Amino acid sequence: MPEESYDCVVIGSGPGGYVAAIRAAQLEMKTAVVEKDRIGGRCLNYACIPAKAVLRVADVLSEVRDAGEFGIKVGEPEIDYQAVGARRKKVISTLTGGVSSLLKKNGVEVITASGALAGGGVVSAGDRRFEARTIVLATGSVKKPIPGTEFGGRVIGTEEAWALAELPATMAVVGAGASGAEIASAYARLGVEVLLFEALDRVLPTEDADISKLVERGLKRQGITIHLRTLVEGIESNETRVKFSHGSQSGEVEWLVIAAGRGPDVEGLGLDAAGVKLSEAGLIEVDGAMRTGAEGIYAIGDLVRGPALAHKASDEGVIAVEDAAGIQTHPIEYVDVPRATFCTPNVASFGLTEAEAREKGYDVVVGKVQYGAVGAGTVYGDRTGLVKIVGEKKYGELLGGHIVGAKATELIQELVNVRALEGGYPEVARTIHGHPTLSEAVMEAGRAADGWLIHG
Ligand SMILES: Cc1cc2nc3c(=O)[nH]c(=O)nc-3n(C[C@H](O)[C@H](O)[C@H](O)COP(=O)(O)OP(=O)(O)OC[C@H]3O[C@@H](n4cnc5c(N)ncnc54)[C@H](O)[C@@H]3O)c2cc1C
Image 1 (cartoon, rainbow, N blue to C red):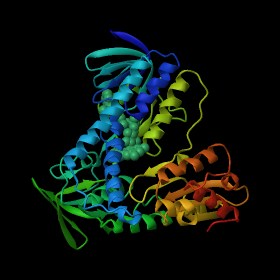
Image 2 (tube, helix red, strand yellow):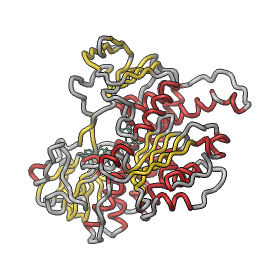
Image 3 (tube, rainbow, N blue to C red):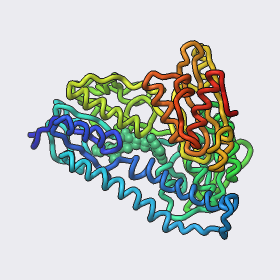
Image 4 (spheres, helix red, strand yellow):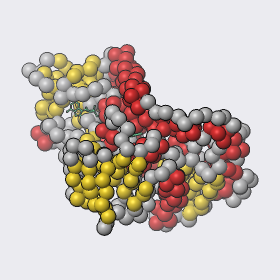
């Protein structure tokens, strides 16, 4: 017999699950979260947050090294990696503690156990059973080896890469997508000799080609050796080193990081028995309101289609429980979810690349402006950053935005917001921006697209 009855039980407390739970509680649903590991999910404990904490250290180190350009003389900085690890853990505990407080403040009960669907609106959590009118599956994703590789020994995934206890001398990173580029950029600047491998013909292969070009240049400047169109094969790991081949060459490093491929964490969730279906890609099938085919069961975050990003998971959590509460929701336009890569140079984008827009048959207009065109680029010391707007000529529609350079991950939001409010690049061009700010480069890119670039 179920020991308690809830309006909403969320399984998993990552950015999808905890946000869903808080929103459900706000909507006066009696809510519980079942978490088998740590509150905050993989995002806060092992992925996004530790990654950004270490990247921030690399950024500070780069600024110290570049201080001479600003007239500040400093000696060769020394890295205390124990202190770096301690700060990373402190950042994580501060944020996860914050999430626990928010859950408590909103009256969400936290159940520490492995959760599963037991059928008929019942959730099992360890040896306890709970009745739930609404169940939200938010169990995220786990690393998956790319074909021909397996984890073990010195072959690790991205989460382990951010938690290394000591700085190695050498590292190979397989996959130059967002995670691979971040790992390579952080560790290379911290003094590690980094080899970066990508099977496709450019780094950040899903970004706009112009952006990839600038990122490749930036990563090489950090001393990273990049091998494009290259498969890593024949991986052999022992206690201290990993050997592998790539093309006709061989390599040997202290750690080999596989930064490609993750899959939904559905093991033991009891999907079959509850009638929850998986797509061919192995993801849980949902409609625009995040409903699975099974009555009262929703799925969100890395379990479902769309970019595997924390903010996308959170938004889906809100949609799911609002739908359960009877509020009208609307499906996410996945292409317009902002995408951010926190390597140096910083990269962010949303919407279509120029190539994708052309392929879709739009009458494409492009506005490109370098940071050097506006005062702030020179003041802050980044003249090579680039803002690229991809638009549609007739109605001035913003089809995509692509930024590389300082604070790109912050700047992209303006373009996302303008599109969300049904504005186009002419509105970006005509909105007054503060001076001197890097956001003026975004405005100028709008003007470039609209045919009246002033600075540049
Ligand atoms: C290295 C790395 C860096 C990343 N950086 C970024 C970034 O900068 N920005 C960004 O937007 N995204 C980033 N991501 C992606 C982001 O981490 C995910 O998209 C996000 O965590 C998905 O959130 P979620 O709520 O779906 O799941 P998760 O964060 O994975 O949380 C799922 C939770 O469910 C729990 N769980 C699983 N099964 C059960 C069960 N049966 N019972 C109870 N609990 C269970 C897990 O323990 C976990 O705590 C990164 C990913 C990686 C790997």
